[in-house]
Each structure stands twice: as structure tokens, then as C-alpha cells.
Image (cartoon, rainbow, N blue to C red; front, side, top):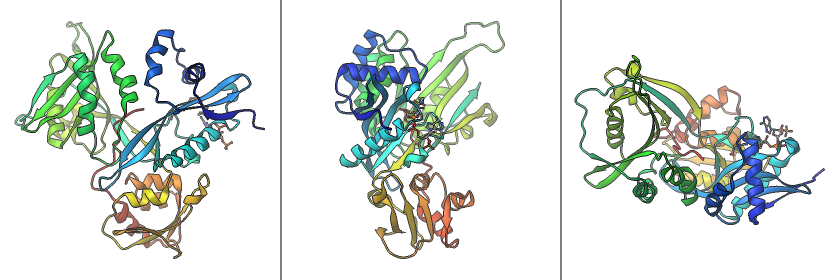
Length: 404
Ligand SMILES: CC(=O)SCCNC(=O)CCNC(=O)[C@H](O)C(C)(C)COP(=O)(O)OP(=O)(O)OC[C@H]1O[C@@H](n2cnc3c(N)ncnc32)[C@H](O)[C@@H]1OP(=O)(O)O
């Protein structure tokens, strides 16, 4: 029985009600009037979807228009899904399923090739065709110091709050793209995730790095103070939220800057790329621990032929694969993937892959061989797997670096 309708929310009161549903679903307090006044203008029109019943709005999701870098460097349109929540008395009766149907149809109509999200729980989104496409590690650096003699050419400068609000989003457009998985953020992301704190009582610390060609990197962090100098463990804890640079050399210099700040006992660095050797910059590599390694960006190939055509492939003989998409059946079919491109084919497939698992291969996060070993591919021709590994391999490990 369907006792709800999923649609775009247009009225202020409806959007606020959806927000309250979300807040309760995430165990947060509801919005104050003042906070709502700040938040409302950050929403783009027509991008808040909800489920409505005779008791009002019972589900929420907000989509912002973004784009994601794919292997080879193309930047491809992506619908970024956030703020998903269903009222507890309406869960497990298909509300999210209908919201997902609505979002996928909307994204397709807008020409978005991918959907992207960060999942609160790993069991929710696979059934809608989303798969883990990037992972990140959270680091804890305790009294870490850099190795002597590391090159450092650029200069750092501190930004005031208003300067940071004006400059950092523009700088991110320049330094935040490169690796597969990095994405554009959009004005509403900055308004909710950055500007508010910068204009509050305890703004983030923001420093920009400049090299010979101008500004080329930045860090954003927060300090948690500890004044107890009697303690053997005195010094602040730094929470490092962002570290972006155009090159690895710039990133290394940003790390050197962070590790040189006085009166710090620990740096907690969130969402860092898996393959960055921060440990290798340190006098004692064991002062850097990986606290957690988590899935990060979940991708959904909404238009499979366009998504497959958007990326480049490694140097190996072609492989034919069959894609299975229960939610968007027009994507289902057989594709030949080669170094020179992708085409539909009627040749027999070496393996069959569900569209969520295709997302796990797409940015190179998982090798086809590993997916087959875990029973996630239905394999007809085992010989083809190592060729598929080489075709889907990427030069750099995919990383998103943007929470939303
Ligand atoms: C991108 C983001 O914003 S992530 C944030 C997601 N939001 C939250 O975690 C907030 C708290 N949770 C909720 O609001 C809801 O439980 C949601 C949104 C996760 C799920 O909404 P529902 O309307 O209950 O989902 P729906 O009824 O469509 O479920 C579809 C299927 O997924 C399963 N499912 C949904 N959520 C979960 C879950 N958290 N754990 C296990 N299974 C789940 C259902 O059992 C159902 O399975 P079936 O098809 O085999 O029967």
C-alpha cells in the first residue's frame, strides 16, 4: 500500500518540516528559527525532495549539482545526495526506495551521469546501485616531527575569517581537482560547511600556501586547547579538516607547516588519501597512526554507457562484460571495454557485474580479480579477469576528500 507521495518540496514550511525529519532521524536537535533563517537561502530551488503523507512531510533528501573527476581527468556531472532521513514511524515501508527512484529519474533527466553520496550505514545504498568507490584514512600524529632537510620552497599566510570565506572556495576550484573521485562543491556546500563556522565565535584556522605561480594549497584546522603545562601530555590537539595542494610537493609543505606548529601534542587528520606517505615525511614514522580506514564516496553509474565512455582504460586486450541494473534496466546490457573505448556488443561476456559492483571497479577502488574472489562477479572466463584488472587500473588511488 502506498500512503505517501514523493515529490519536490517547494514551500518553506515543507522544507523546514523535512529538515526536522532529518534532524530527528540523525538524533540532532531541531533547527532554531535563527538557524533556519541562515540555512534556507543556501538551498537551490527544486532540489529538496520529500515524501508527503496526510500527516505531512515524513522524509527528506537534498541533492546538489556537482561533478566528479574520473580516471583520465574528465570532469563528469554528478548528483550529490545528502540529508536523507525518514521519520521513524514510516521506515521500512519503501519510502527511501521511492525517494531513490525519484532522485535517479530526476538526475537522469538533468543529464547527470553519476550519483554520489556518503552513507551513514553501509547496508543501505547497494540495493539502489551505489557502490564504494573511494576510501580514506583518518590519521593520528602524536608529537610527530618532520625529517630534517625536507625541501620547503613556498610561503604560508594566515587568512582572516572574511578573507577565508571569499578566497578558499575559489582556491578549492583550482586545487581540489586532480585525483579520480575529487568533486566540485558548489556554493551551498560552502555556506553550510564553512562560512557559518568562519563567521561564528570560534572560526577555523585557515592558512594558504603560495608557490612561484601563486596560491596553490591551503589547510583548515581547529585547535582544542590544553593549558595544563604540569601534565607530561600538555599541548593542544589539532583537528585537521582540510589539506589541499596542487602537487604532492605542495602537500608535503603543508604537512611540514602543520607539524611545525608549537604547543601541539596531537594532530587528528580526517579523510586523507590512502596512498599519501605522511609517515615517510617524519623523523619517527611510528608517530603517525592510521586510526580508521573508511569508505568515503559511494558512486552510482546512472548512465552506464556515458560513464564507461567518460574514463580512460589501461593497456590490455579488450574485455566483454555484462552489466545488470535492476533499478535502471536501460543500463543492463553487454559492453566491450578496451584501451580505445567502450561500445555495446552482442559478444559473450567474460563476466557479469551488478551496477553497484561496477561502481566499486570504476574508479579503481577494487580490482575485478578481488571482486571475483569475493563472489561479487559472475565469471564465465577467468582468464579475462587479469585483463580487466589492467584495463580498470588507475595511476593514482581514487580519493574524494569532500564530506557531504
Ligand atoms: C546520503 C545520506 O544522507 S546517508 C543518511 C541516511 N539516513 C539515516 O541513516 C537516518 C536514519 N535512517 C533513516 O532515516 C531510514 O532508516 C533510512 C533512510 C536509512 C531507510 O529508509 P526506509 O524508508 O526505511 O527504507 P526502505 O523502506 O525504502 O528500505 C528499503 C530496503 O532497505 C532496507 N534498509 C533500509 N535501511 C536500512 C538500514 N538502516 N539497515 C538495514 N536495512 C535497511 C530495508 O529493510 C528494505 O529492505 P528490503 O527491500 O529487503 O525490504
